[in-house]
Amino acid sequence: MIAVENLHNSLRRLANGLVTISLDNDSLVSDERVMLVVRVLKETYGGVRLRSIIAAYLSALEKHIALTSLKIEHRGKLSDAAASAIGKHFERMLNRKLRTRVTVSESLIAGIRIGVADIVVGYSIADALDAHRKRAAAAHLQW
Amino acid sequence: MQIISMIDFGELLRTFGVDWHLLVVQSLNFAVVSYLLYRFGFRSVVRLMDERRAKIESGLEYADRMRKEIDVFESSRAERIEVVKKEAGDIIKSAKNDAKLILEQGKVESRQLADNMVASAKREAVHIREQVIREAKGEIGLLVADITERVLQSQMSEEQRNEYAASAEKMLLSENLQ
Image 1 (tube, rainbow over the protein chains, first blue to last red):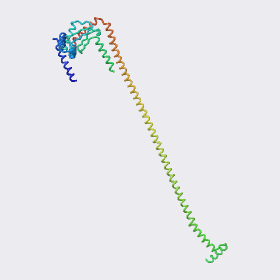
Image 2: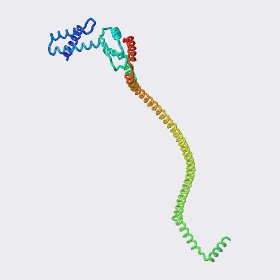
Image 3: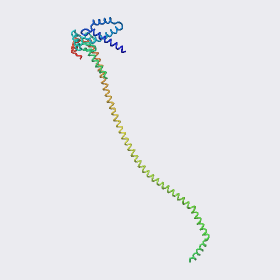
Image 4: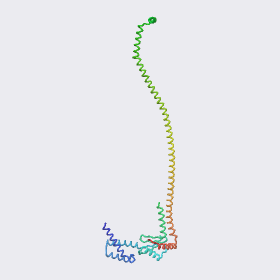
């Protein structure tokens, strides 16, 4: 059991190290570096060990990408300059570089919703209505 | 003179057929019979009569004493009956008063209980009413949100959406997560 835990810890440390060398100067994941790391891993390891390392590496990459991705959903006009300004604003607040991704979401009705990792900030009609629903449900559940 | 008188008296007795000897013998005989009767008959009869008398006197005394005791008992019984009647009357009066008090107390308690029940029912009714209102508000709130969402989804113009998005952008840029 202890040996398995030690193996997992070693894998996690290795994956975190691989993620660190997969980042560019802005601490964002670089596709080229990732491809290079994967190629080196394939040349170095094989079989089950390679699959375990790749799986741990992908998991660590996903976590880092989630922490460094800014998802902007909007309904209504949002210029590129406005999206960029929002991205920079959140970079300043979170003190790290973010990769911004903008999508149109019909379900918002109107407005903007921002998501970074587990942080969600909504300024949309759908979010306002959801908040209203939660208040109504809370008032209902008080009894 | 005295001798003459005795002779005369003797002659007188003979005249009437009285024989001295016979008289003396009969006298003695009478005395013996009298003594015997007195000794063996009369005394026992007298003793029996005395005993009877004593018994009768004793019985009479006893009867008299009993009568007196009966009188005393009757008088005391009457007094006791009066006392008992008075006590019974007092007890009945007290019982009536107690019953009245208990009845009044029961009425008061019943009234208080009824008042409490009414107050509790009123509170419960208010509570239920508030609950129903809150539930209705919750349901209405959810309904309003659903209807608003559908209406805005279908009726909101693009220009309005743009205005809303621009407003949201300004608010976002003023957002400070820390």
